[in-house]
Length: 151
Image (cartoon, rainbow, N blue to C red):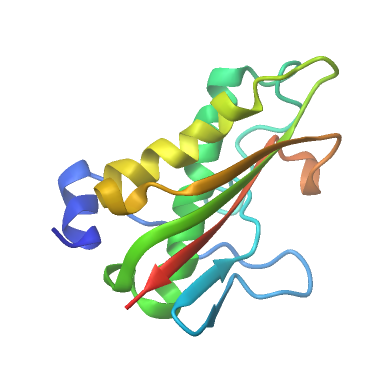
């Protein structure tokens, strides 16, 4: 099943591409790989939550925000090459703005990973890093970047 059909089946619409907040482009293709820039959990041009996971943001909220980041990354891929050209998800890198002592970054980034699995099935299985950081741009709780292989 194509990714666009699977998205429709799941009732998910890809958002508009989030405009860059600095000097970069949302996604770049080289050969058969597309790399996205780090995507914040922007919704309609705004961050729905700010702060650190484990303090102002719960791990469950962080996981939902990571899912939004992944949708934004897929929107960047779609705008560049079309979502149906994706043959597999290669890598996900998730950054979690973490309160001191918070060690649940893998569970937060699962929000992105699980979404990619829902959409792409076995082709959504990927290598991953889940990194705790002190700060993210605009005081975002989560940022996600992906690498996908395309036809």
